[in-house]
Amino acid sequence: MIGRILKTPPVRRALMLSVILSMITQVTGAAPVMFYTGTILKRGGFAVTDALWMTTIPTALQAVTSFVSTCLVEKMGRKLLFLGAQIGLLISLIILGLGFYLSTTYSPVVSDDIQSTINNATTVSICNFRTCEQCIDSSQCGFCYDVLSRASCVPVSVNGSATAGRCSFNSSVFTLETQACPSDYKWIPVIGSSLYLAVFSAGVGVIFVVISEIFPLWARGICSSVATSVIWISQIVVTMTFLSLADAITTHGIFWLYAGCSLLAVVFIFIFMPETRGVRLEEIDQLFMTREEKVVLDKQEVDKLSSH
Image 1: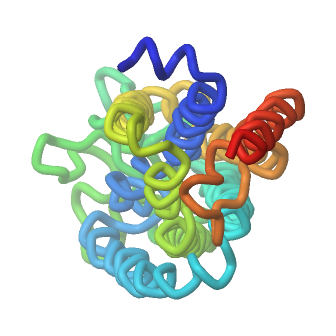
Image 2: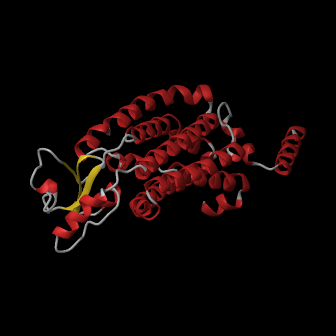
Image 3: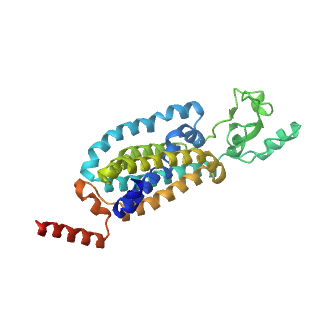
């Protein structure tokens, strides 16, 4: 059966298309945005408890738009819906990256005079960082301030309390941050992730409809299984590399990387993906035929009719 699939040009092309479309659903960051929403919001500036509650916003939107997609798939068509979804993902990924970029760029800075006093008072200076982002990235440090213009990076214990500096003796006046930095831009990742999941549920799920339609009956089982396997394999790879890439190229960098993949996906879908809405099952093969193959097919049909 596999040999027949590979030797049949239209089916082989349909299989290649389904594999690429399956990869597109994952290399644009679907799994990280879904599975790491809490981590994303935490890195955006929300405390852990707040980030966990904030995950309900994109999840609720995802549930609503899933029902909307069932109405749109027949009215808009598969290609237009999938293409529109990719454009929406591109915009949301740019927004996500922008939110983290602004949070990092405008992260509160450490006051030099206060920090030097703390460093002189400690035996080993392990928290000599310049910004809040750098400070809380270390599990041994926390960002201490009463006002942001007078802040310091101080060593903390295992339970998260300061062991030196002003936050170690006057916690009622000073604030100690160990998980998220104060930021005026922390709502941007919420908007970006909410838009991403809403658009993804409304449009990208149409890939399963496409996979079920573009193969002839004799090849549908194997080809659909291959395409579905590619989805899960791609998801595993993207999920496993997300945190490592985020550390290597920054959080905003990885979302802009996904945005680049989404831009390439838009171009690919526009050029190569056929529309299957309203196409009869016996005509599906023709969507993946070259002009020469269609001429041969037409000639065969004419010969059949003339023989009768």
